[in-house]
Length: 267
Ligand code: NAD
Image (cartoon, rainbow, N blue to C red; front, side):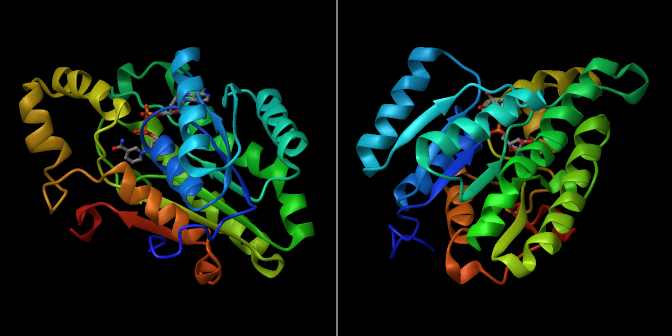
């Protein structure tokens, strides 16, 4: 989609939360390739994060920085927005991607896991939007992309907090879209099916335990059971979709929940 016009986002600044790994990193890389300056965020080894920062800047000729905000903490999120504005002169694009998962039957679901998943997977998108929306409206241009999930559209057992948070993200997306509609600010949710990232790799043993089956059976019969293509979605494919949503060609796409799920939600 953006391959033929790789620098369409030159001069824009994007914050991508949870971009030290997985989908967020794939999206950050693709936005950088399209010419956007990028503020990285997420946890991880400081040296490894520095390497990502240097590599993205060198490979794509853009400014790349990193802020370690804990996306469960509103004060950290405010600092992330403020530092990005100060360092880059504004925020044009936010990708609310940071997320965690916990798999457990509801009767045993730890209350602190429920609270953390709601905070990181849902409330953080509200807080970062709240911190950047007025400036986007004032500049008459903005792109807000919420990385939701196929679990924003359908449920699976043992993922009560995650499914609730991701359904909430779609509601938030629609509301933000309506508030931004006459100000050049779009807001969309991307709903990936399974992508083989650390988040998914970590839940394979938990799902095996919860269902009493082997890890191989989890991949075949649980993760890819509903994914009609029987293939994982890739972070590069999600990066391409996010970059397209940031172009002016996508200006009339707003308030949507766009599946990229190998046909999962077509069932
Ligand atoms: P991942 O574990 O590879 O990456 C998660 C990122 O979020 C990491 O950078 C991590 O450091 C960061 N993070 C976690 N907690 C944080 C916090 N409190 N503050 C700041 N950063 C934090 O996971 P992923 O699979 O790339 O998931 C990214 C997003 O995509 C999540 O919102 C997830 O729900 C969603 N998603 C993933 C899949 C999948 O199959 N992998 C499918 C649908 C949706």
